[in-house]
Length: 138
Picture 1 (cartoon, rainbow, N blue to C red):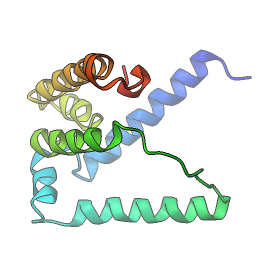
Picture 2: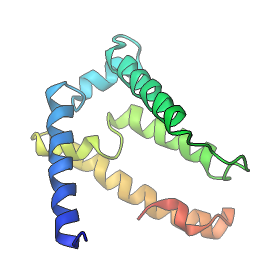
Picture 3: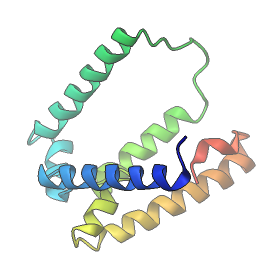
Picture 4: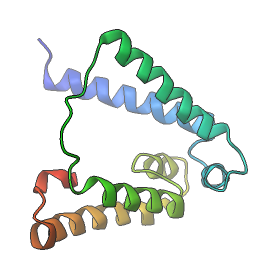
């Protein structure tokens, strides 16, 4: 039986390993992310494409099937906002944490933006869009 402490320790070790790997290959660097989004360097883009190809093969081998259904109303605007924020700030939600750990303190602004965005999502979804509040993370 797994204890909460063992699961937490495993998560910390995995997170540190991921952060080290991402930093070592340069994916925590704002300039690298900017080159990807401006199509100057396709190395990171091809890495993402390779990861998607691997998971598609794994899902096929494991026969994972998605049940068809309606797309959640917040998926499209959420994806647009996520992509725009990523392109502007140079990081998805995990990368700014890696950037701060590497000494790049301007990433704190990105982290603050993520928290504000989640709060705004909760507020707007309840007030204007009638989306379920569980779709907004925190």
